[in-house]
Length: 82
Picture 1 (cartoon, one colour):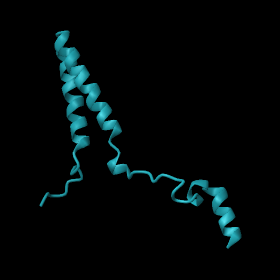
Picture 2 (picture 1 turned 90 degrees about the horizontal axis):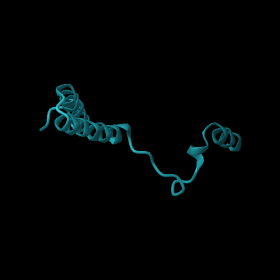
Picture 3 (picture 1 turned 180 degrees about the vertical axis):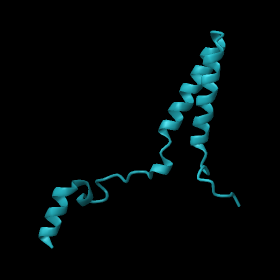
């Protein structure tokens, strides 16, 4: 048993730390930092396109903001809402 614990500690040191010392990682489905960044960039692009009258910048900002909003949707896996 000691040999198994030593091998596990060599292979993955994070797995053998006591729980209060380590902080659990959020599941990937709940990590939305990238979506928030994309939304912020899309809104900035949209505002810049309005200030500098550039239709391509406005369209790109709208598309990026739309994609980011889709990523922020909690029910994006397609399950019907009951």
